Length: 382
Ligand SMILES: [Mg+2]
Image (cartoon, rainbow, N blue to C red; front, side, top):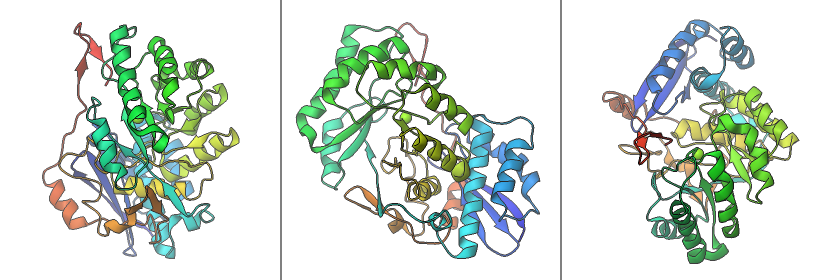
């Protein structure tokens, strides 16, 4: 069996799909993408294709190491996202060839259903109560929202009070009938993170995500020592060598590797196992498309410490298309009371509607994240 061709498709809202074809007619799907840098990752995939065409797709471990080590330079958002999408497609091919879902190739599932949550509130959190109420009626009881808009390195009491008031309002409206995580999104600097964590503690969020930017990972321990709120991070970490520092330093309770950014299924399984050795939970990051979500679920079903799965249905980024639009059979992602059942179809368990994808790729998106400024005109973290 040999890889014959790699094809890529840009599609709204901001996704890149990869199809790896073989000489035996079996194909696999991946999603190699960095949001806002889809064309850059695509270029990396095309360069990696030189190492893949003509090779046996069943040698996933060897191909992964070839891509990771063979090019001398390694790691980082672009290269590890390119490897991630390729790795997903190779697992998809392997599962389809053997007629089993990927989780069966990995030793079988450890749970019957996987808990998911829904995003509410958008980029600048608003309308949160009404959105939670609507989703609660659909059976969801766990949510995530952005904690804040622009926040200066040291900001005013009025800004802090606005953040706290929004969270207080949620807890007051719903009591403990729901849980919610708060994403600081790297918008909060180290000084304000300490303040906000203390102020938010009485409202008992399920976790605070990216309490500070990942480059300040050495402060996670200091922050966690000042709060009982579990801290989560990982969407901007790309390999087990990066996660190693975070786990050794302590302070993070939930790791959030992204299956389309951190080397795919192969690398995220290693990261999950490392987390388990520290009694740290896993909650794969996934504001992306159906192949990325399918890859996450394959990992969730074999990792005992997987606690919660992000998914992008209805997320504020999904303009022009949503998660289920490119899927031939959307029922694979059916949620019952917030839980998704184990995938049963061979490979990643999701089949892509290629005609729909080709039509979407005719008008490729050029999504860019918003560019924010502080009130003094300086660049703000988004
Ligand atoms: Mg986040």
